[in-house]
Length: 214
Image 1: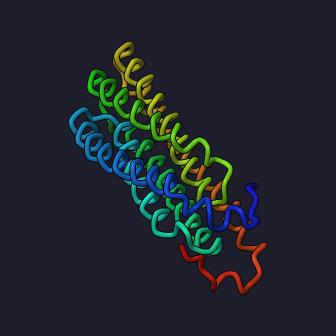
Image 2: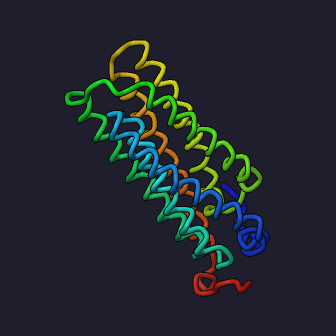
């Protein structure tokens, strides 16, 4: 669990560089959601659709992080709780839709999957590198890092799924990757929830009403 002492309470979360990186991540994720949702619908790829929903959730999460940057740790921990449950909900949705696709889906277009997956991988790798130095902050910072890390892993898996679909001519690689992404969402969300709850539990009651000014 990350340290919940004063250094992570105000300066790190109000760091101009941190805020700039969050804005970059927000724009990248919003743009990739639009691209991937269109490509997923056009290609019939369950993995691309799952990745698109992940981009949408992450864009909303980055917006929340920007909104609470500079506030008291209690408010950032509450925001992290919202993000954690969002990830859990995403994972559950993808898992259910993947099970449905086992009996109702057709093989997706591997070429579209591959091209869009590579573009998404490059975009998220850049964001993850920018966020790497903030991976050990409070629950809110760590949640942003976990989201970006999961995105890179998911994008690489989509590219591998495209190769698998092309080689086998079946939808199974696409469905397997979608299931892995569901597991990442569930696991990452639970990590964030546990850390945020721990931070809230160790705060004096008076701290929950105080916010830090810029």
